[in-house]
Image 1 (cartoon, rainbow, N blue to C red):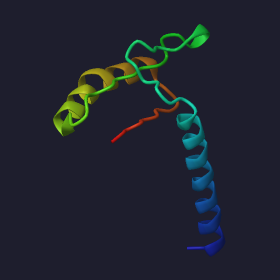
Image 2: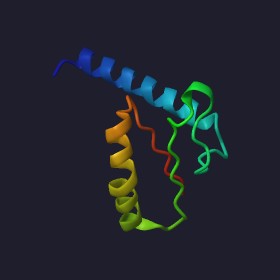
Image 3: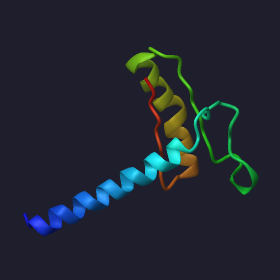
Length: 85
């Protein structure tokens, strides 16, 4: 591999992570199921809050039964996941 290419990729990845961190960090307290977007974006936001400790089985069910069908219909360009503690 080329060291310069590696460094450029590392910088680009860091910039992408910083962008996501700044967007997600700007919206504390969001993510309620009733929040579906506003204005022309209404209906384009899907929030699926799970209770703490829900575990892998709950996440798999939500993924299979809600996220996949919605993604197939909407065909989003990006999906952001915020997984808290």
